[in-house]
Image (cartoon, rainbow, N blue to C red; front, side, top):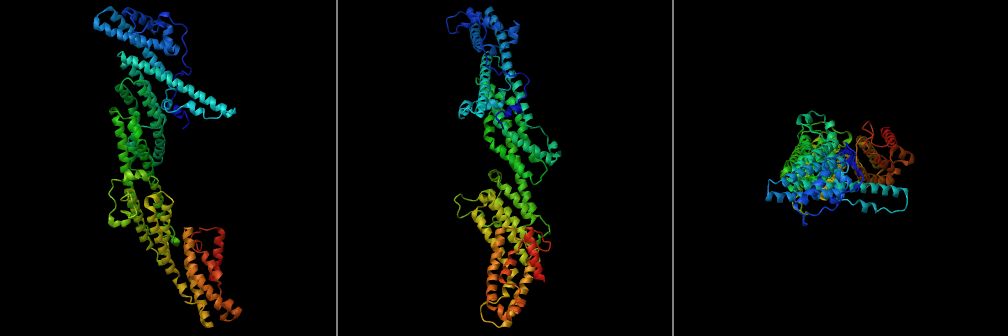
Length: 637
């Protein structure tokens, strides 16, 4: 947010703010200018005489000047003398009470004190209301933690227009912060004087009215609203999601600026009394804070459970957890215990909601009963959706560690021993989040194993398992799940992928492998050579046509399978081709009997596993697809 972003949100000026610094008075009576200290050898009559002159001058009912002029703005020096005069009068009254509680001087002093308090109430209100912009939470919250002058001086002065703009902006910010500091100092001086004189109630009342309006306005402008359970449950998810996103932005500003700024201001103004500053801050901020921190609990309780709800809930949990030190610090006093309790309740309800959604996610995998099988043995939608979900969960591993910490781990009989106590681990048993993620993936893999059985072709079942497990491993490798599950888990499952791929190769291509002689270079008759070529070509055409619609989605796995098949097939066929092609009856007969060169076989193999033939769904380029169709047509010819 820009430097004064919070001011634009929280401040809606109703009166003209005082921007200029206080100026000196035009004239002051000599008596006031040389007002003696109470500690000097002065008589009681002199103290009351000095007080009468000063207080009467600024009595709002005594003159139009006193009624329309701000003492603290007109002459800061005289304002300080006024406060000193009131403090001396208070001490004098204490002495008079001890000497003669019914004396005329005491009555006169009491009347003067009431006039002075009325004046200070007016000044306190004016400073608060006229400086709303300079006492906005952002200005206050950054005043003590930011040195504007030092940061501005970091810019080199090379005389450029940009530097002039920076300097002007810096001067403007400095002036604003100076006004803020002066206003805070004046408010504290008045509050100290009124509290000391026994007029704390009047001072507090003014402060609460003005400052609570600023907090309430800030909460409203941040877009945080008060909702009931029924309102949330009736709200469409799309609308609720917008409210959640808005809340996530609002809570950051509210904690770092709105409540923090008010806490600083309240502590400063009422520094003389811990009980007063805590009471004031609580009355000012409690309502807005409860509205802010009750919203996540309402979201957690809502019956709406679209897949994306998990991540909105985790985002809200993260926001409260990250701001928890500030919540405990700002709302530390017992008077704000309801705010802390509400924030804690929201954390508890959010964590309960996450646990319920994790359980529902597991159940939805186990209960998936679709008989749909992916053409070509490709990625099943369940695999894709589940791994997207788990990959996003990995981004919240820190908070999930806390949320799932109290959940019982999966039964040890359900997971390999390595998931629980890794011999290479120096950190003890695996954390709850690791166990649960490993368990959820295992549930997914078991479900995929049952879906593989839907294929009538066994080789396609193995290819399906290889594809889907490879997709799982890839998602783990490219997300935070890799840090949760570790290299050992990844290596184990990559080995399983290779095993599934090897099983596919063995079942699908064994017929072609067996059509070639054990020793292609051994001496054989022309008739035997012709049989070998015919058997190879027939079995290759048959298997190629069967496998032409197969899909291997991962490029690396696709190349590995093709290289493995080619190493066993093309190498052996090349030896047979080079040794016996011309023994089948000369060049002309050779071309009729031996229709494939080793290069042709390699080219056919290179076009496999794109799933682009016979309507199986093109995943390659148009040129690749055309090439495949041409070669496929040649095989059928």
